[in-house]
Image 1 (cartoon, one colour):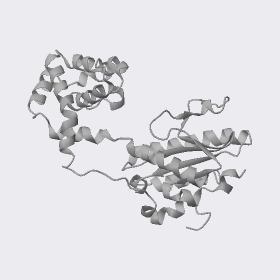
Image 2 (image 1 turned 135 degrees about the horizontal axis):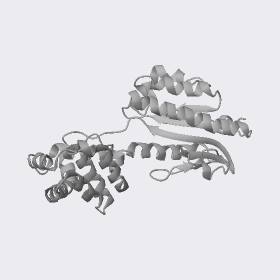
Image 3 (image 1 turned 120 degrees about the vertical axis):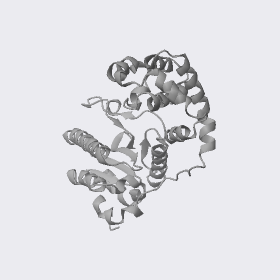
Image 4 (image 1 turned 90 degrees about the horizontal axis):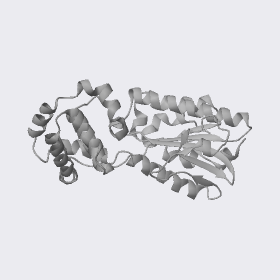
Length: 290
């Protein structure tokens, strides 16, 4: 691609610029899935049999001390009892009362839950396979950020990149700038030249998302860029914003065009790119430019 090319210029050959994560074959995963999740289903069955109501079932699950087991039980609860309850709410033991108040009327009665559970074999291969899909959720994003850090360090040894390389807390911009108007704004990495922040970055791996999630993502990025760059411009800072997005989801719907519009909104201040574009599109001259 020619120097100075925009993100939109890559669209025609976009499939050549995305990085595909490797997957796992079905039914090859079933043996490992059943080994991992049979204890979860066994414990769920024990709690179902000892619960007088579906509310009691949820309350008991929330009291399980092992966090991994509690989350898996909550996922099984959602499948059997309350598919309309958001997964993220079920993960939090403090949300039990709120869940019961908002969704309790739709809970499947405990007698029906027990009958449904008893109608399935143990281990239930179908449910184990569904739970297996959650196992590595987020891993592709962690892999992406780890590779970003490695690539930036090898390409720009004279700059420093900060942030969680895999799992870990996001950087909050209130910890970077004391007067930042939205101190809880989370970002994934900073590129610095000594104490000067040259770029603020976010990274995400899009597997196959589209539709409303697509709109939410690009809309959130627009707000993030506007917020950061308005702050930087008012203080005559050279700070740029980098959005690294990768994966086949970029090829769906209007995702590519929406990301390209972010660059057009802030010419010279925003770069959207996949991992493969980093060597071409992120340069020392661009990072240091006013």
